[in-house]
Image (cartoon, rainbow, N blue to C red; front, side):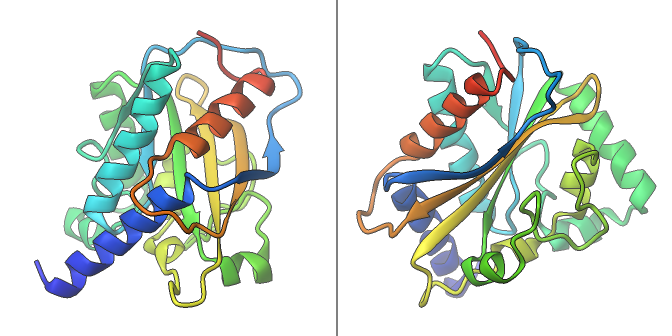
Length: 221
């Protein structure tokens, strides 16, 4: 493992955690108008990142915060190590259809009944493109009817290419899927303003996330 990789890991994790202690602003939020609140037994937190250490720590922080609020969430860094990691995806050597089958197999094996997929967006890219759902895709998945396999499969590491020297705000996307229907049940985009305090937790973002899921009638205990 190179010093450059370790440095990028440290920077990514530190900035995310410090960002989540800063004021969090909800920019966009969408849920189907007919959705009914549902209690889930096992919500998987999936961080889209090519940075393995950051992925592990961020997923754990969000899952832990949700559990303290009474929601059964768990990190998935050992279940979906390929999420956002191009090298791991290439090593799997699977076709697009095989990848989707593989994702479903992992979902069933670990008994997830919901997924929350999280991604950090590039600020400049966000300003220029403002995607309707928020992810920067390497495939044709820019619609509200995309299922969770397509989000994990096509959302590439490009979402994690952040120019830290000019970054002043974070834009974070979170999308929740019901495994039974394979449908997107909610998506929200957040702006976290000027992170300036280091060594903080993901509490602010997790608080805002759970608050919006409850407000939109997506989850219940």
